[in-house]
Image: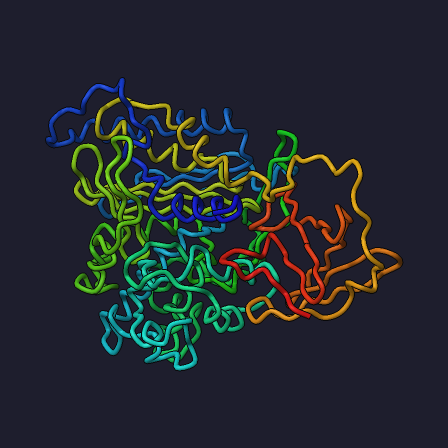
Length: 516
């Protein structure tokens, strides 16, 4: 597995179960064993909530993230909702509890409740084959194509490879185009491997929306947002962009937070495209804790919601004293050190968003934290600190270091040549005309290579991406990328031979060869 694959595999694990707040994330050999499970005193919960102002302020100071919003739900009440910092680092406009943030992969959990609502209404189930409503959908194995269900894709057990389809989104392909091209990806054994896929889940959601006869964003509004009064929540990027009180994404450059390029995730909206305020998310969490009820009204059928909140697939093995992680349908489903069931999910856009919610139904308690900065572990740290205080009355680990160290690989540049000196005596390239032309690839689409004033330039994708090439050695050139899946400093090889070119960055799952 190359470095790019390792990074993407880690991302799937991190957001799909590896980093589970309120569970030990390291060996903890010097930690005292937890007290025997017992009732958590109400006063301990109250004291934990009272410490949130200081916890949040300390995290803001240590991380210097521009903005953060936090809400806590106890039963059917929002007992804490507050904003910290700025919506934009260069503007003094403050974050408050109504500031809208992009949720990134927390969208998966929100979307799972949309699906559960439709399941409860009948006509579709978690076990409904996707092809029943998307007859054009196909994977590379005919038997899996026929068998794969909505639940399989929401549990990341379809066999699709980790983050399959994400690079197509970076190239500008829309939802239908990406989903159609999933048929070219090799598959893991069906039901045997957990591999986190934004577009696999999106295919399942698309099937649910098609069955309802409306688009996913409208279905989400009608099924969940409107019944809960989530007036500042949407599954459309245009709605987020139109809000005055919205938090813009930030990236860290030379140790300083600066506004990022932004992220328009409509292609994978069911997996990462929701935007919301913490006040709205608190309403959703209250519904979750009440097993589908809100303000005395049944919004989601409890029996339809229960499978989403049950362990459907092991997402990570037990290691270093940490128990195995499990995924439901769009939710991480774990157990805390006191033996309490935990529902949670994190979200991350490298372009500038990091989010987390954690709910402990036995305590009727949940917290959500939204930030407008690259993922460095701030939301997960606050959740873990809070639930340490709730369960034990004290913070038992350095969660900031644990999560910061674990998430650091997400921001590392990719490529075998990163940090390598240029060859001192490189072999010359052939005449540039030997490399120009159109190269075909079923998955990524055509690649154009042209000589533009003595420089080779590649053009590919729907946007399209325009990537100048720099000579490295012989028939090997390099190019750089900077997008959601390629962090600054990423370097990829473009290695030409007689009738083909191999692009290192796009060789995930061995699909990086383009043929002329």
